[in-house]
Image (cartoon, rainbow over all chains, first blue to last red; front, side):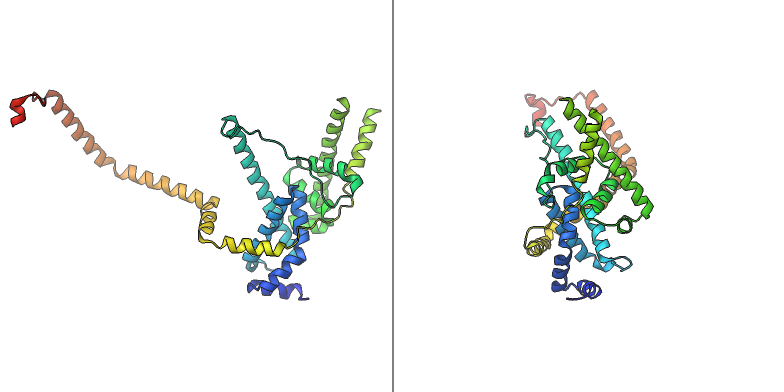
Length: 193
Length: 110
């Protein structure tokens, strides 16, 4: 097993075996983060591939001041956010097209997302949380995914998001409060029906 | 009473993602990744992705607008001359006594 530093030096020389080892070591981390943010297996795989391609092409810019995994987290989050923006743009365009009767298809919301890592008895409840997460602002959503889905401590989230631990704590408090508010509204309307 | 019930449910739901296991991608991710990278090396796909970059697209629009502005600014004097010539020709046509009727045999011979 080659050490991380040596692996990165080999990747800078575009070594195939080193690249393969890097992908195999960090693929779960990148995929799980992308899946938590995007809530779609195909999109998450797409973003995972884009992340590793970006890492391969711009490894020269990695100075080693942070951990390699932190650098990979940053790339995958930025790629996932780009993906959301692209999807929103497409959705808006499809909506305009449907208004003008170009293909006549209605824009439908995707079905509930079930994370494969959630236990069977928690599936329905977790799907409600993931649905509510879609309505969080990007920063809160990212911090929440890194903390709850990836299980990272505040210090590491702070390093990835380039903010202090107290700022991460405040961000997560706001994210949890917002999620509770969204869920309260959802269940109160459900009870009224 | 109902509020308490909702609050309990929300707390229960929030706890449902407390111990989520890490998800893994489908097997052979590296093989798919290599195939994609090989495909991306295609000159046309590289060119389209390069042209599709916001910076490049915006620069192209700016360049086109700049060229338009240059053409309008530097063709100002030439345009005036042309419009003057057109006015003279139109006036001459309007006051002309010459008939261009094809049935006018005398003029046709000329």
